[in-house]
Length: 126
Image (cartoon, rainbow, N blue to C red; front, side):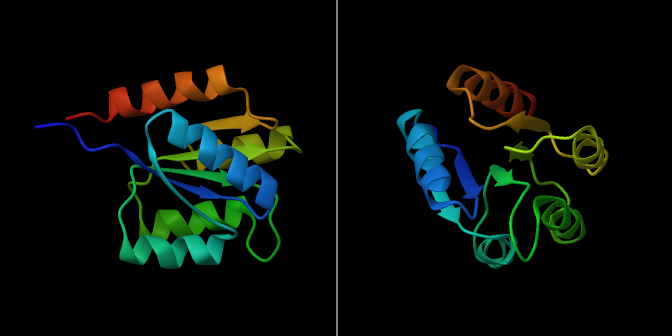
């Protein structure tokens, strides 16, 4: 029986970044959906399961750190990669302390992302 493709949710308020990342992940064989903010993501996750969430940190209304806190309350076993164009040591430390799997800077480097995805899905394969 063929394996089901891993499902990834991309959360980014920046449309071009969201579309670009979604296309890139789709080309790698993942099943990808995307939403534009943390509230939409939480609603989505109440309806559907995903294997991984890739979220921007710098978003209006609910930033990535606040979203990660909500994930920890409502979906504590989520795999999360945080992405940002404005990386700082404080947000990195906070994201990692909140359980983010990885924290990468924009623009996302495809090889770096592929390496992280292999690591996540290898560690979580049963």
